[in-house]
Length: 445
Ligand SMILES: Cc1cc2nc3c(=O)[nH]c(=O)nc-3n(C[C@H](O)[C@H](O)[C@H](O)COP(=O)(O)OP(=O)(O)OC[C@H]3O[C@@H](n4cnc5c(N)ncnc54)[C@H](O)[C@@H]3O)c2cc1C
Image (cartoon, rainbow, N blue to C red; front, side):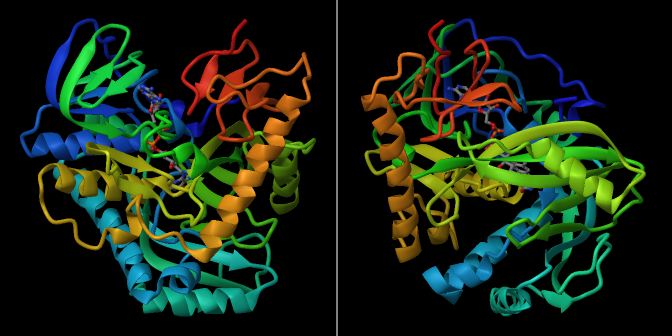
């Protein structure tokens, strides 16, 4: 079944479409985790907030996550120290650790029944022990009590594993159901155009002093130019029965590394990632099922789904002012498949920004931050991709569908039966219906 495990045991109440003009302090575009959390924090401070979503609450990447709430984001801290220095790595670590505690506080104070559980997070390697040793030192320098070990619950031996204690998991849709109860949300209300202080939709215009882009990939091209500063990557997950419980979760740092996370009575096995639009001929779900049959011969795949996330050149989210030209526009994107803590960090930072409160330790997330050397290299690679993809456009192929965002030729993903844009990651179903932005329109029939 091509639906995530989270959609099985929950119904989110329907919200109506916007059908009139509105005036509000803040308009939030996007009712995923980032948008709902931001709306919740702002409303708690007495602001009037209207949230709109082109589809339904939580219907974007949030319903397809694996929902590990963690400050362990792959081999992150050695890269942060290399590119930005130890104080930036410290900022990143502390912001993420605080995000975990903030979830716990909100869930307990609001009594949200969402399976929140503290556990440990592990990185593992089957080959590169040295890399993990370096990451262990970097994590400790960043203030995380990380610990190297060889003991894991994985179904194979490892060269090394790196444990971050006291991380967490939850059910993302149960959480946003609880949090969104008292929020003013309009579903099936797409932001079509944005003026300085107005969000235009089919059913009415929203006048707002502040506008928050929590729509995954910001669809406004200028100012900001985020289309040239991000790409998207897609990953696949299968949900397996008949696998004994794992209490903690695991993420492989080798080229063929996998993600292991237990939820309810299912093992969620993830991996086989690729840049959106560049799926090649590989059969991603079969690859995951092949691994599962080796690890747990008795297991049976009962769910399969995929999702994608925005990746910035330095792998750090863009959280803060959208552009100097638009100081009242705020942005939360580029979560690089670690959007649980990043959504909380965004919600807190944007709330502080709107309330004119100091935002401590946020420079590392600023969309206007300095570009590191490795980020420049990554941007050059991204630029080359776009040029290559556009060159197919110059050599006309009349059968090729092109993206409604910036005209890039689309490629066909046979496993998902979707047209995908290799430049910026927009997706369309086989009939041309828009699935993921930054494009905002269906394909021409
Ligand atoms: C396979 C996979 C596994 C993952 N696992 C984890 C994990 O274990 N831990 C972790 O921290 N992160 C994980 N992530 C990342 C995480 O799921 C995402 O970063 C997060 O869900 C993004 O939330 P969001 O609110 O920014 O976006 P979304 O949930 O996509 O919400 C954006 C919303 O904006 C709406 N929208 C778009 N355009 C418009 C418009 N013009 N007008 C109105 N609405 C609009 C969409 O309909 C959508 O509902 C994973 C990602 C992948 C790909």
